[in-house]
Image (cartoon, rainbow, N blue to C red):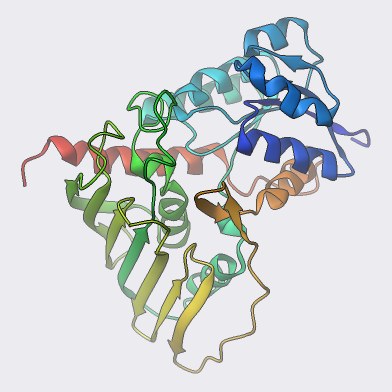
Length: 340
């Protein structure tokens, strides 16, 4: 396939514009359409120089066909729009989370198999230098047996983020703190250590009662299927700005802590017969004005999508992995109905 891979982007917010920009920056990518139900966004996307449509249905009926449709809409729309894209004969790039239930993820995977189209899930934190280094350390068993893994995600998401009248904080469209803020870190955990079992947890809502339909904090404990135990402590109740996203690993032959605000710095490495290499610098965080998100690694996603569709490589985050992250979050959230 020598011609350019064509893309349409559904959702013209911050992330949708980032997808559009990444496509246009790639020599083998071509943006053909932008879609958003908010007509006020039309002037914002005029710089991309492509047709603007006010609904996905309008685009599919009247717009130029795209090889790939990027889903950059509120979480609650991902499953339905991914299904529409697959039925239209397009591959899908879906922002996290892939859906808000395992059942919806399974429907997407079944449809992708029926239509012989690929679904790529956006889990860009895998591309950060510390994450790639951790994967190498775990794959090569440098730490020996894994004993304990602790993940801490302490961010600020206040009224500047949860504005009235938007989808953020709405149970149906947002899904919850683990889906919207911290699914990237659950993905890294699953990517490194595999699935979990024997989950227990407590959930708190310290200062989001007027802002969201769900908890702002949680303390989760579990065991790994492959051995070892772990904890996930998370909160969006941190005052004013993000504090940290970190992972501490205690193993038979050493200990590692990757920290910083976005798991972007190796803070500690003491491993038997091992000298820590100099890692490349991490990408800066996605900047949303008042708050920041995970590392801006979307260019790696689009390189992988285009190279995969041209037969040069394979999907780095496939639909089954997207499903596993959703399933783990679903299993954690099922504990909300369990009395501890």
